[in-house]
Every structure is written in structure tokens, then in C-alpha cells.
Amino acid sequence: MEPYHHKVQYYETDKMGITHHANYIHWMEEARISFLDQLGFPFDRLEAMGIGSPVLSVECRYRAPSTFSDDIAVAVRVEHFKSVRIRFAYEMKKADGTVVCQARSEHCFVSPEGKLLRLDKACPALAEKLAALVEPAEE
Image (tube, rainbow, N blue to C red; front, side):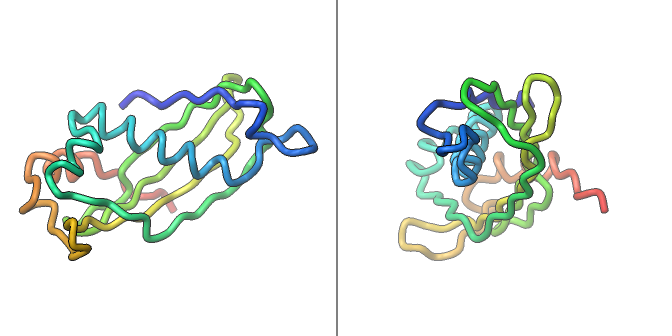
């Protein structure tokens, strides 16, 4: 999968000129949407199919600062997938290769009524693709 690229905007920085920590979570979402697009399952299509994917948890480890106009490449991989839950891992790097953030987000799949969905039943083609992409975390 191709990494998602985000150019740090001035408004995303704080008084010290460093990217505010909350923005990395926005970039994770942007990268996840791009990841699903690349798989052929745009998020709006999933929603039209009645499949939601709320965030259950987020973990970020900030490794180095990023600043205005840095190009950040966000690589996404599937770390864990079991039909009703998925965990994504993210690595964000500057153009020079400096890792600025390593992160994870965990999600479940739900119906429009908020009931848990088994993705292997609701969208078998996507479930199959996600299962094939699982790369467990290195300990």
C-alpha cells in the first residue's frame, strides 16, 4: 500500500512552531481513509452499505517534532483483524526519513443501529483483503 502524504499546515502548529500533538490523530484518520480507498472500499461506500467503524482506542508515541511545511508520509498497516475488530498501526516520517510518530488505532464494525457487525458477513470481500494484510506487531 502506498503511504498517505500530508503537508503540515501553519494552523496545525503551536506557539513554538511545532505540530500540535492532536493533529497526528487527524492524519491517522486521513491515512486510514486513503488505505481503504486503495483497497477499493472507500469509506463512503462502506457507510452506504451500513458499515460503520468507530474508534475504540488510540495510542501515539511521538518520536521527533514536525513543523510547518514538512511533508509527512503516513504508512498504514493492519496489525490485527478478527471480523468485528481491527487494529491499524501507523508510522509517520518526514521526507528525510525521520520517524515523527508511531501509533495505533483500534476499531470495531457496527450497523447503523450501533450493533456489532461481523465484517466477514457484512462485506466478505473486504474482510478477506484485510485478513490477508495482517502484519502482527514486532515485539
